[in-house]
Amino acid sequence: MPILTKDTLEFISRSPDQTLRVGARLGRHLNGGDILALEGDLGSGKTVFAQGIGMGWGASSRLVSPTYVLVRRHRRHQDALELYHIDLYRLTTAAEVEMLGLEEVIGAPETVSLVEWPERHMGLFPEDRLWVHLRILDEYRRSLVFRAQGDRHQALLNQFRQELLGL
Ligand SMILES: Nc1ncnc2c1ncn2[C@@H]1O[C@H](COP(=O)(O)OP(=O)(O)OP(=O)(O)O)[C@@H](O)[C@H]1O
Ligand SMILES: [Mg+2]
Image 1 (cartoon, protein in one colour):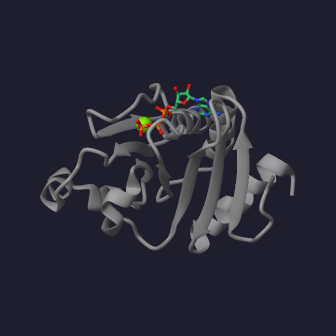
Image 2: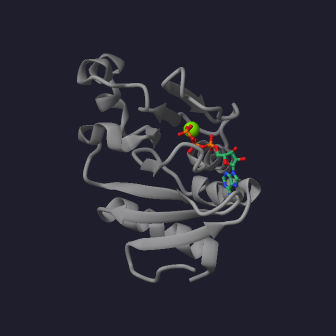
């Protein structure tokens, strides 16, 4: 059931495929500078959701889990935008984060950022962002709660809500 407050939207997915499709609907609205923080336990569906986003956005390469690579960059053919799929799970120290230059990437004007385990390094995130909480309900059901923080991502959430629910 959707939570009908201005800055929040809740969606219950009933299958990996549905999570992909919801991701795709969000992905087609993403622009340079957009930031999606994907927070949730192991196996909650962050990567599946990110893959759907990549499909909707039109990434030329398929998104796979960045758990071991930490950062993967994707492009699409129609413009110069880049999509960064980042996993902070294994990044333990601030020095490692600095070495990867993530501060310059997240929120950059030509860049869309999808970040798994964002809570590991909160300092990387500007105030304006879309926070997504994924929660395991049972084997196949996942709760996805979207919370817009800041005007830019409120506008994005509004578009997404319209796309998803026609509201
Ligand atoms: N409704 C659903 N939505 C998404 N994934 C689901 C759903 N139901 C079951 N699954 C399964 O849950 C798993 C989600 O894996 P995924 O790699 O996306 O998790 P993750 O949150 O990225 O984990 P990690 O923290 O290890 O990166 C997959 O095996 C997928 O098939
Ligand atoms: Mg993952």
